[in-house]
Image 1 (cartoon, rainbow, N blue to C red):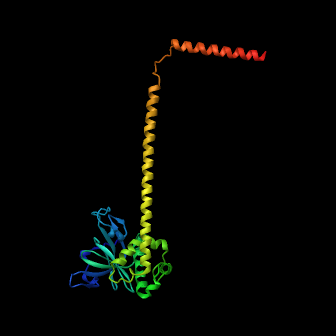
Image 2 (image 1 turned 45 degrees about the vertical axis):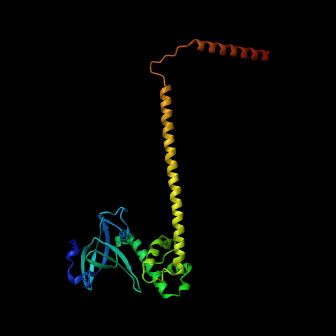
Image 3 (image 1 turned 90 degrees about the horizontal axis):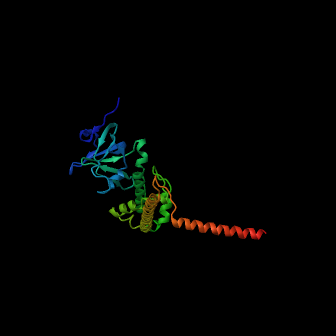
Amino acid sequence: MMETEVKEADIPPEMDIQTDESNGMTTREVTQFAAYRQGQMVSICDLDMGPGEGTENMEIMLLGYVVNGSKKLKVEIGPLVEWCIEYGSDPTIWTHTARAWYKILSPIEEYRAVHELARRRFELCSRLFILAVTIMSEQCTYESLVSVLAQPYKQMKGYSEKEILMESNFILDQADSLDDPSLRNTDFAKALRQKAAQIAKEQKAEQKAEQKKQQKVAANRKDNTAADKEKKERKKSNKPAADFVWEPRSNDRIVKNALLKRCAKILTNLMKDKL
């Protein structure tokens, strides 16, 4: 028998962890989840996309199980408004709708690959913040933190420098938005900002070069098309009609006689040489 999910508005109060009396927002926990847009699995990072990026009128919903102790209920939550990271010694990912905040725990197996982007951003930012507030500032160099992040930490993965650079803009945005300035004031953040600017410059140059390449290809294609058309027209204009019959003209006979005389002279000279 298939289990039917409960709509968010119908989630019973016993599934709530707590309720903020000041704004009426409920807090819940959800596990075995996956995010969807129009039936397709998507990353919750898509919530960060701004207007005009192809997400208009495309709500993201979350399907999963709301849990409270031993209680468990399959639900459909949404539309989601945003997602965020709760920093600290025990960091977590949160998302919220107009009705409630949800601490999201473990995704379903089929969603893990899609969730990898959010997981990577969460784990990198969480670990960097912990490092920034727990070790001496002079120890937070780019090289040292890249080395530390390469190793697993608790349930978190290790990440390469390439993966760190992939998320440089997100990491820096998070560092700048935090009330605690520890992370953004590190030598790591300063070096990462410089590397991010260099990467952006290189990407812009690559895009410009690719654009020029495409324009050149398009121009060559246009020239070739025009040349082919001209060739076909020329061939068409030179093609004789089906009822065409060649008739010699007076100047044709003159040319022919001149050629015959020249050939005869050449043969005579050859015969003399043999004799």
